[in-house]
Amino acid sequence: MIKCIYITALSLCLCGCKANMLSKSADGLGPSLSTEIGYASWYNIKTNRGTHTASGRPLSDDAHTAAHKKWPMGSQIRITNLSNSRQEILTITDRGPYIKGRVIDVTSGSAKRLGFYENGITRTKVELLSRGDWKYQH
Image 1 (tube, one colour):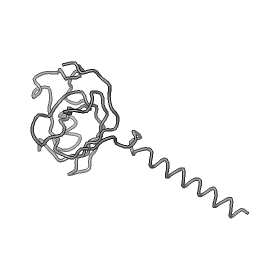
Image 2: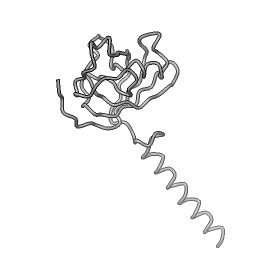
Image 3: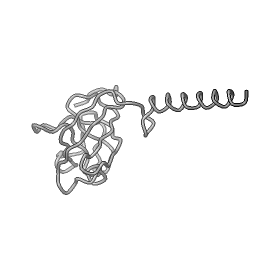
Image 4: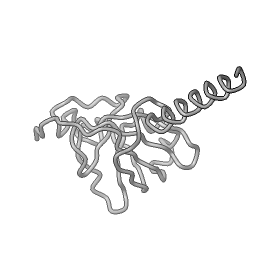
């Protein structure tokens, strides 16, 4: 009888743990809605020629923000530098990049934290975690 209760309790625990692992990612934001693999580059106030972004939010070199061609403004993304596995969660606040083969532009601060500032570009995996609903401003 005790053996039966122990096995039942263990089974319930394992099922609950497995369900929780499937529904949440390591950062607690859930599974990605879309994924792109490609090159990331960085930009800053100087290369952007000012602090205005397409979302209307100001650009800061150290912000956890990025530019993407089509994902909605305010979207949360997880970017992974494939050469060193560093990750960061960013918010889409701008449009770009406009160079063939690049999938995302991140701020220079994010590029430093991700470990590719000196190289200028790196191969990345970019995961859409949640769709934003900010209005396009510019």
